[in-house]
Amino acid sequence: MDNAPGFPGTPWLASNGSSYSHEYAATPVPYDEEDLAKVAYNSDGLVPAIVQEVTTGEVLMLAWMDETALKRTLESGRTWFWSRSRQEYWCKGETSGDRQWVREVSYDCDGDALLILVVQEGKGACHTGERTCFYRSFRLVGASQRGRSDGQLSMQTASTSEEPSNAPSE
Image (cartoon, rainbow, N blue to C red; front, side, top):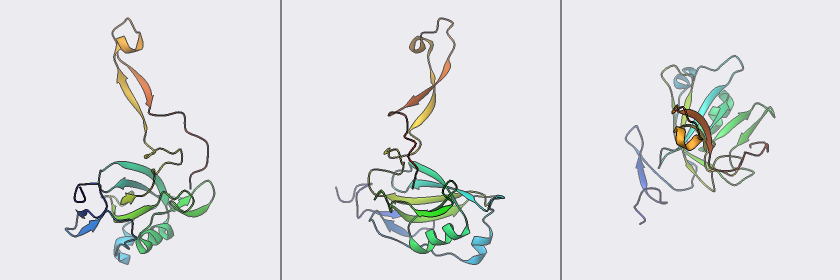
């Protein structure tokens, strides 16, 4: 089982052809100033960063980075973000222990969004205790399931757990 996907020690192939492992270890990501200059920050100096589990493809969270947070992430191999509510930097997992170990960072075609592939340590990425922040969804539900007699489908919010707490995220 040691070589099965999702188990520590399993090598994974990065988009550039190199391999990385599922180990909980900081892996700095090489970058140059030319690449950094291609990132388009919004009027607040921020860019959205989508965090995805490298082994499963599961989208874990979305947070915001400025240039300093992006550089800290690339240099340290851990995810760093800018808290818009607290107006401070935070390294994911420093308080909760649910650390994210960076394996790859990409920017989209317009440079206005980042994708960060990580190995997620601990129970998950969400401050509510869920593995992913995207544990709720809108789903089409058939008429019989909603008690509608007109045969129309309607939207219903589905949740895998209780309502999220209002506790601040890291």
